[in-house]
Length: 191
Ligand SMILES: [Fe+2]
Image 1: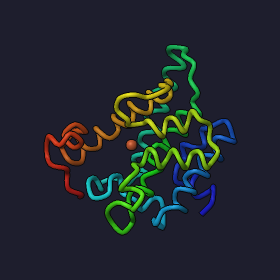
Image 2: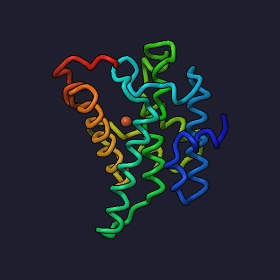
Image 3: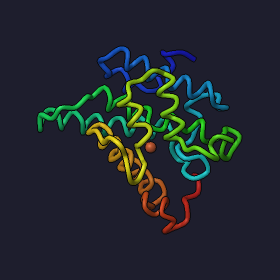
């Protein structure tokens, strides 16, 4: 498993212009895999035991594609200042902590009982030497309440992660994010 394996798995990373960001993103996913008990990144379902109709790779790529489209539209149409490299890396990496939260054998890992994937992913971002702006995206992509710095790049990933999750749940399980994560209806069974 090397950088080429990651770039093949996440072709969206090829659109990153800053080579150090691209390499850092590949390093982070490789570190996540190495520290987990998963054999391959693509083996992991989106939410193990809850939503297994797509993979975690499918969800990260889907989020990256719509985040890139939104980021590009904001730059071209509204002339806003935005670091598209951070948007792409942040989207591809946002759920990179999941192989550390969930065991390949089923259920949570030991560390996953105490820390959730955003914290575990942010820790890997720091080990991989990624910029603080990207670590911030991974750490706070789904945190409710107080967040120290809300960059536009973070807001894009928060919204697009939610949109991708919601659209996949509607399509595959006839449910919404609200249904699943507020307990309004039973969790969807894996398909
Ligand atoms: Fe996500």
